[in-house]
Length: 352
Ligand code: SF4
Image (tube, rainbow, N blue to C red; front, side, top):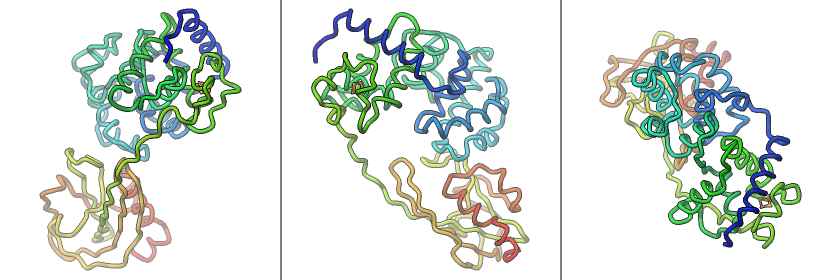
């Protein structure tokens, strides 16, 4: 890798920002420098696409327009607004961080990296993204798009996702930052990765910084960065029992400490775990679903309550709810599919 001259660096920044001004997508969180709105958008955008985030972002901001409103909300309401976005830990961290800002910092979202670094769920990426966009603080960001763009620009063969390569890419992201318009520049790098410097078939012919790009010059776009190593998937087979009693169904809340779906509601895995007996009915639905490194097959089976009251060492809470009330409880996507199947009008006639 050749070091860049300062003239090349200046040209690069100028061209990238000019392109961003021309080509950037009109996204709801771009119309603001409010750190709260930027923060919410960045948390949602981790692991989720822009198109999927937009309706959630608008709905979330409608219900919780300020950090005070978010801090005052109960956790179930916050999780309900997150339902379908997945990775619910993000929502719980966001909520806890909002409470901490209100309690310890008078509801201010300050231009202070130390305050942000101490908040739950705020890593180096979120910190850099919020402070650079809201306050133009000169902090780098690295995420899936920028690590690809930087590796190609400089022709780095290292894997930017781990070890030495990760350290390199963070340093490169810091080195290319301009002195002004830092937030726009960080967004421009991500936007270039999303729209032009795509993982497969990057549009180098339409790229504003093609002249500066080492991978383009050397024809190495397809090899840089090296492909992500395939994660070992853990296959999980789960059951869910829809135990019915007097027109209601039993719903249980997962404990706060579980690796997946903490505090979400679900149909219990068995009658034993809720201290009941029931007559098993027909299989309702089999749902196949992937979450992080898990490949889940969830088999939902109907059952009719026979005896016992809710008592569980695993679930902290269990409630009997009607089909209408079911909609108020935040559930994981696969459990939500069982709910949808079960509450379909056509089934209601037969079951109840
Ligand atoms: S020239 Fe091609 S490889 Fe280089 S940054 Fe632009 S799109 Fe990416």
